[in-house]
Image (tube, rainbow, N blue to C red; front, side, top):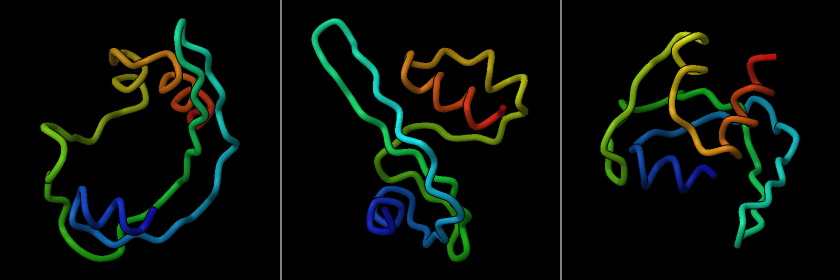
Length: 79
């Protein structure tokens, strides 16, 4: 996880909490997501693998177009 954040966003993180895994069945694929709550403790976010990022209110986040599995992660985090 530390390596991924460094490679993709150019930051070092602290893992605050390991959240409950999410399993989801798409029509032709079963996935398991392992969400974490993290904090950036060093560096400025630089998009290396992504095209967009931002800070959002809870209401804005819930209005975003997300994959079904990602929506479960967001809803659990907010509740």
